[in-house]
Image 1 (cartoon, helix red, strand yellow):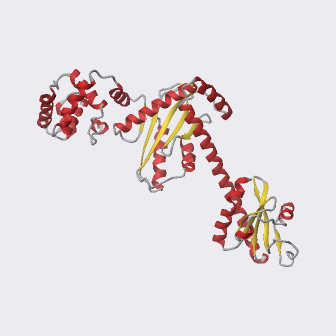
Image 2 (cartoon, helix red, strand yellow; image 1 turned 60 degrees about the horizontal axis):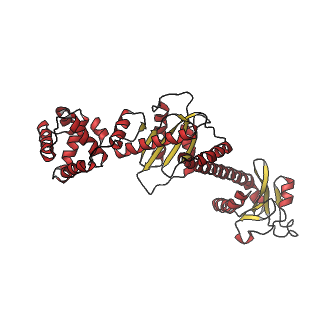
Image 3 (cartoon, rainbow, N blue to C red; image 1 turned 90 degrees about the vertical axis):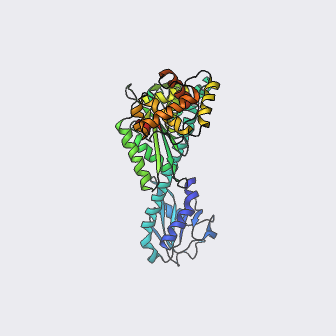
Length: 397
């Protein structure tokens, strides 16, 4: 086992340091692949085959090793992995003294091997699925689709069922904090996998994608299970003493490879809209009316962009420009209701009236006209002129 040979020396060093006893590990061919005395690495241990055949603990005294080259006094035992002998562990020293350690060290090393193997297997699964997902969500050409169909068949992934895309965006506030992807992979699988047809993979260091299998067609509304999973993710990072912001976004139900790519685009657009509008980190669906309206306001084709930008530039150049923009947006989002807008802004109604009058004099807009206010509102949102301190969600509470 190649991975055994790669980690044998580190296992010896860590175990020997804790127990303060010299150790050695050989592979099945008798080559020393781990040893406290690094000068012995790569040399042949002639007693390995005898220990392997005996399949039990063997003691080697000073008298017994006189005619055995490169064999030191001590105790040796086979190392097993998945019921197969893969090498031999040796504890060097007076066999009557070190024998007491042999079973403990043997169990420890076999447990470490299992953990390392599981970690390596998890990493391989994660990287394989990550590579597949990146091809899947970026596939548009028929050649790519044909190639992906073959790839999915090889991985045993079915696409004749309905799934929706769920994205998890994890923003770690302390950038110096890092977490092993394997740990998160295990956790995300535990929290979100409810069916063998669910597909889970990391997109990058901060984002995870889950293609959720849908038993029957239904409207994708964040379920209770997603909120429980979100709480568990927060708890995980809390135990790591790390502050994070987590946003979950979902697309619609689709079947087929093209459908998965479409659902991903919807979930990703939902995520970007939530971030751009500083919505509270939570769960957001492409079908949410709030998301739909915000998406419309940023994607709608507005007439006479140059003229609208001239008006916006005038507002921004005004000494009180940020307050005018914030007040106007708030006024629109509260159905042009002066009193309600003033309360949300924590200002006097006359102050809001004064700001709207300033805006009217500045660019000639009729603030009582629904059509004109809608046009300016969409222009402000689409052309990125919203003050940084402004949050639509906070305004709507």
